[in-house]
Image 1 (cartoon, rainbow, N blue to C red):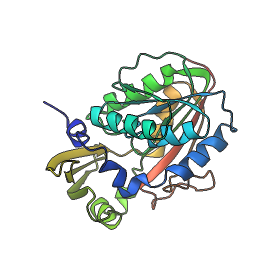
Image 2 (cartoon, rainbow, N blue to C red; image 1 turned 90 degrees about the vertical axis):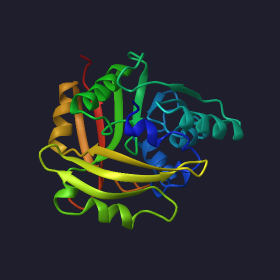
Image 3 (cartoon, helix red, strand yellow; image 1 turned 90 degrees about the horizontal axis):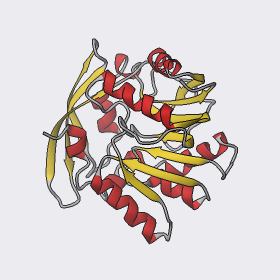
Length: 257
């Protein structure tokens, strides 16, 4: 039986690109470039690349990027978009919990809940981080966003999602936040590229900063910085607050396990 995140992204490439949360690509890539000192010799892996928006934008700027995802339709859309722009980008299908890479990349990006926090157990989410760490070189850097566990303690996730959702986009309702597991359970309704409506029982894991820090320290990351994640405007100047729906995590290695 397929998991909700597998069903959600089936035949959902074109519609996905219309979602409001995909509109910050250029600004997010501006931030990534600055973080790696505009070094085009670096090798980058885009985890949970979806329709390839960050992979494509970074490739257009001269970077060497490989995009990986679990969804065939999302990868197909990514390949179509790259081909239309005459870009050669390697897109591969992989489960982020079981990656074949080791010491291959200088930078890993995992944005807009790309893989991490969608898994059904904390152990599976940790496997994603562990595989990312394994894929990076000793001097590697990880930049990712994840759901801010401080937000649902002060705000309604359902109200936030409805206020930031444009007409025709995926909608969430019946949100229930579990204080024991820090998971938000909801009913997500989405229309795929063929006009078929799907209603899925979803749940995502929200993390507090201390959890993320501990998980990354377990994997031997050294400098771990966490900020508020503003759509299309990532910045080290944005201190994380309870108003931030997502947090931006930047981690560097000291040595590998």
